Length: 273
Image 1 (cartoon, helix red, strand yellow):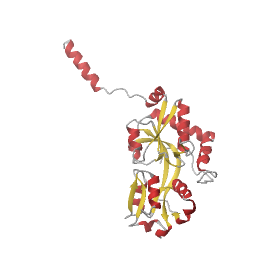
Image 2 (spheres, helix red, strand yellow):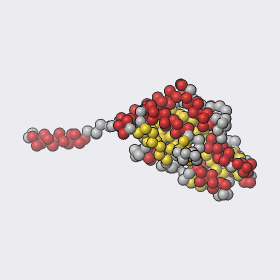
Image 3 (cartoon, helix red, strand yellow):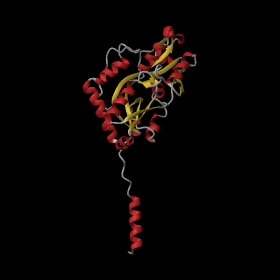
Image 4 (cartoon, helix red, strand yellow):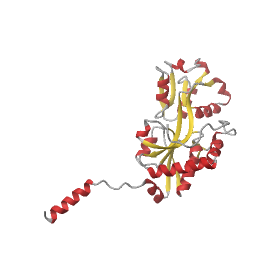
């Protein structure tokens, strides 16, 4: 075989070998920043502080702690619910801290951190609707956010329900107040926060007691990025061990918050469903 043929064969063989996979954690360190996708509309996980106009919250504090440990600057980027996973998959963000429910279906798309919060999804209804339990929502219109687990969960729990979705939870909540539906579906903690916002009108609304589902919330990591997941999980585990995780929970969810939780019914210790 002559030199030209040898060179061509070598080039062909090289083309068939996949390029070495760059480690995302190294890339994050090199660029000096951790780009974190948040909702910015889901108090107290991530929302705009009306005084500072900055996005703050429970998940934002977790993201800041992770960035500090890695030794980079946190960059907070606001996303819609539906855009969360695509933005992570396409590399436009490094980490999701966006009220993301860990589900088996989503495990095919992304990886999840240790569970950072556990909640249940419920329905808030107008008292004037006469709805007192989930079964009575059949054939009626309920409102929720697009792209989350709320829509499939309420459809599963209430066959025949009419679901209308909106780009944000706050649009759905406003639509409930405007009479565009009889119920509004969201995580229990978010519903309780929204109920508190109603002020004197709270007496006109009720959060139904039954859970549609139990929702383990976690941070989202790009599929297969073991270095990033290990770093994120390591920080979360250390926050739990030191007691800082519990302090952050009570800072945003505790007795002095709008939600007034008196206990934390979970620990940050597992990424299993």
